[in-house]
Image (cartoon, rainbow, N blue to C red; front, side):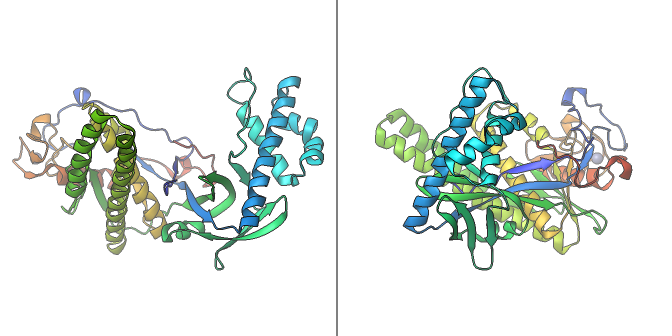
Length: 415
Ligand SMILES: [Zn+2]
């Protein structure tokens, strides 16, 4: 399993993603005009991140965990059968119906029993037309009462059928940092005979009261990122590697043999690792820069980037979307950890609008890399120009009144 981090961006209650405007609909401004309405800026409130840790159980503990997992999933199958036969699909109705029977028959703890009832209930949420069955090694959920962490000792204390077990765990530095923000929930998963815990962490987004400016960041292809200070973060190496992988992949795909497929899989993983390392490096640098200069970070709305790259229906465009999303996730969570606020701005005009005079026209950008204003003659790199526009959009956000912002405990809306 790769070392994945999952992110759910939580929008403030009532805040909706603004509608997207296409180039065709964008009016051309002559002279400087205020930023158009769709450039709404959304302040991230709070973010769920999944940290992943690897358990190092003794053979006996491994056995105990496996038995517990199998037993819990067998309980799910039983609950599902009852639900199906009695047409009882609501969690609480199910609980009344089978809770005691499950406790007696499967020996699970009260908490785990409730969790498994919820798992079955969730499974029937989509529809109740098919009987749900559960894989013996499907993930099972733990909460605080049956799982605790001893971070300084690097152990967890986890409930199993053989009683509570203290099991050492290992994880990277980044994951360890995240663990400080863990909430009550964790999933126990078994991948290739190794147990992992996926830990839900809630990082509260820093407020924007303290900052003295905004570092705008434009995500691109040739330059993976460019900031409003004019600095570029090269994607050259990534691009080269990507091209090399791409060529090799095509040759291997033509070949189609078993070993070629194996080789391809390895290649794909290596490329993903490389991309990830690059994204970690870039996001780290950007966040450090913003923190050192007491600034927030402004990023484009990902939907806008997607919209932009969709125009080129190449594999590279798809790849870029994925890479953008990852980079943005990394920036968001590293920024949250560092206390740097992140602003998301609509990118509707950022690449065609002159950052000096505000003139907006497609012709301002004669090539992918160059910006040359047809009105004032300002010339710069297209990426830097966009990054400056992005930083401006965040500096003067449209009126989002305090009252419109919900409490931080507000209902989270995962994007
Ligand atoms: Zn201009």
